[in-house]
Amino acid sequence: MELVDGVLKIPPFLAVTLGIVVLFVGKRLNSVVGFLREFSIPEPVTGGLLFSVLFGIVYAVSGVAVEFELAARDFLLVYFFTTIGINASLKDLLAGGKPLVVLLAITIGYMVVQNLTGITIASLFDLPVAVGMLGGSVSLIGGHGTAIAWAPRIAEDYGVVNAMEIGIACATFGLILASLMGGPIAKFLIKRHDLKPSEAAPQDVGMSEEDKDKGINHLDFLDALLAIHASIILGVILNEVIEEAGLQLPLFVTCLFAGILLTNLMPKNFPRWSGQMWPTRTPSIALIAEISLSTFLAMSLMSMQLWTLVDLAGPIFTILGAQFVIAIAVNIFIVFRVMGRNYDAAVVCAGFGGISLGSTPTAMANMAAVTHRYGASHLAFIIVPLVCAFFIDLANAILIPFFLANF
Image: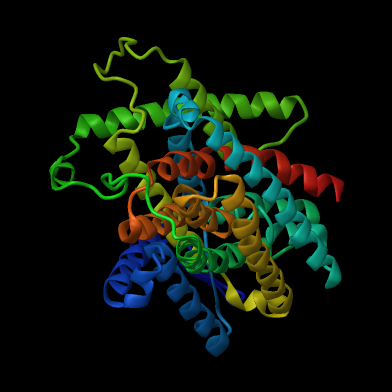
């Protein structure tokens, strides 16, 4: 560590170490604070926000700003999105059928509305379009990962120097609003229309004790790591080819594509010298995804410089308020009706509440809470994860640069 001109610079090794500490602090807080458990606030968000507030207090008292070197964090983002690509089987993508296509169309249309809303409100405060995008699909439907991935480019190309802080703030408060929205909307629809599951069925979320007892050996882990690295290598090559063609995409997007390509082009019984099948949706891939995403979020949130947001508090909360109202209206008046006005549609609405302002984990947590109380919905647990864990990132990769370039 070194203190230079009032800035305490934290090197990469200590940044990763503190990120792990932050994650465990968040875990302990969630275990003792009922509100955090009830609304499924992610552990890295809890710990990261606490530490960012502490660093803000340090700045207010001493004038010393804590600044982290986050190169390792950015690579964790690439790891996470690569695991999403490796898990994307075309067979599973087609299993949702017509409801999947319908929900995807609604979601893409909503993403356009979300961006237009953010841009419009930003213009009312005489702020650039890029700020409105940070309050749109970049941070809300895109979540922390997309916000952090695009913020450096927005800061550099559009002069929004605190783009990272704006994006993370919108994503964080959006996550909280998404957690508050999904369950109540589903309850309202179920009670108002007297909806019930079509049949009694086992829950889609929740591991059996047998599954929890299963372990992962070192070869399973290394095989998954090898598949991720192979996908990243292909993703880097794709990124360079695309850049030479005149199109710039974040590295995590091309690595996501690479994972999809390898997963769906690799013959199922292709003999691999490791002696194991391609690790799509294996516990090892899930473990690496969880480690990379959780540590990534913890490091991102703890490094958020809250004091830089004071001047933009009004626009940020105005944008979020408008997005919250629109998300509720779209859920009740469009998603529920188009998806069939039945119990499955109500559960999908709980998940869409998580998608619209939060993240894939928020969507799953919302639906799990509803189905644990009212009954299972297999359809919702097929189509919602496919839309929010796969298609959203692909659509955002197209919509974000389009809006930034044309508005």
